[in-house]
Length: 133
Image (cartoon, rainbow, N blue to C red):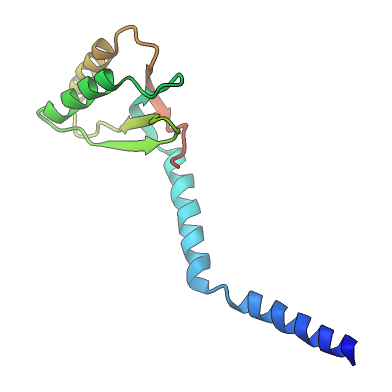
């Protein structure tokens, strides 16, 4: 009798836990996975990565770059990917709103602002490496 009670309880618990997961949750998790997979396949014209060596990103350099972007006449759209614990992030630009010569001028100016800093890397024609947190 105790074995039968235990078996029925176990089956009830298993059935309940299986039935609690809805289709809506399953669809949402699939959409998130597809979005991440599709996003990793996109090549960006330029990616500006801000790194940290134990004390956060270089704030003055970050502000200089974001000010240049904000004040740019064509307002290039970027995708910001936060990936580190100390503020590390990537600014990914497709630069589709700029002509080829404007793209080259934009990238050249970003590289001038970055200078010889080892806290910022500029990558051209690449996929987003980092995934957001």
